[in-house]
Image 1: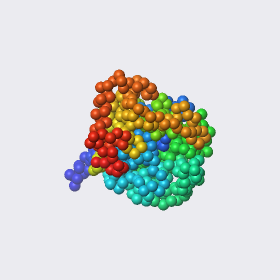
Image 2: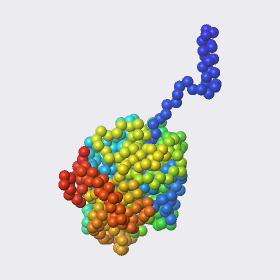
Image 3: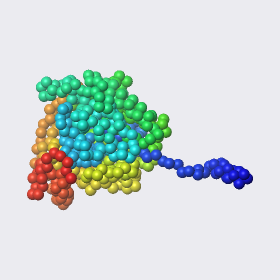
Image 4: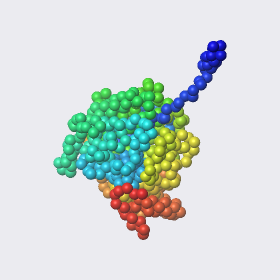
Length: 474
């Protein structure tokens, strides 16, 4: 009896001294990926916007890291989404351009998405927004790792109200999905940003006690632009600015929900865009300034986009990195941080955790490759250099831009010789330095030919290099 009393007193003394006999079990970090559509490099306050207020994103950058040389996987909707969700160059897995309604192409069952990777590690998963990786039921997000889905299957302009409907397009009604069920067909999109935000907050509230992956691919600011009454007329930048301000509000709501649930310190929050601005739409388009060109091109304005990441437990506040990184690196980075197993199939991305955590300033890759259309290698980013191979690209330079939801006409330019730019000194890519740097050109050609041997290049037939057809390339 006396012995038992002393044992009990000993246990009480341990607790009285503030010591815990059982170590605290830390929960794996949550992951929130906020992904906008056609938002330009300059369209965030901390990235230099002169007329759009984004206080929540600006604060997020102060509390985390801002990347100034981050690239989307391709300068177009479906391909870009394929890259960020699989860690692959989109042409490796046969996803090209922007998939339309009724196409028989989509994300293959054999690919492992970011959601599938995390779900296998015990995460709850949800997507609220735009999918755009195939609208056949077999391509549904709920069959590719997501427990919950609310949103639209492709771009918000693929509907009967397109300005070219009946002339160029014959789009069906735009469906709104709840998992695999169509619950509405949209004729007005002004409440969609609010609905996606409310769904996101509810998902966070319901899953605060277990690890989760929340993917919020906003359909905006892709045209047609829609904004709720609470932000209409608020921006100096007109309707486009109103839309960005509402997206910034949405970010704030998500960050507040994390904080209210006491899980903000243990949550990785990433904000970025799928590609650069759709410049043909004029006052309804974003800005990539001071970068050159926009969506649909391999120039920096087409793929270099805003990137902000916050993770208080591991990422120091107030960091700014000029080191190149690409969307394909996110999946392996998140795999490392969450201790998840990488896909069995070949991927192109490499973990950038050392860069994001501030351990070093090295890029995870020796070079990045810029493909477009089906399988055309337009350019290569190599350290401070960006080199382009001869190809045809579109530009609004010298053209009358569109206005109020109607597009202007691009003109096409044929690049006939290799062009080389020093991105660090010439961010707008104005001075071709190829003739002055033959050694750099030669080094990049070697890297490009190595990539062509793996993924091909329909622009250039090389001896021993296949002009690869769409489909998985190992």
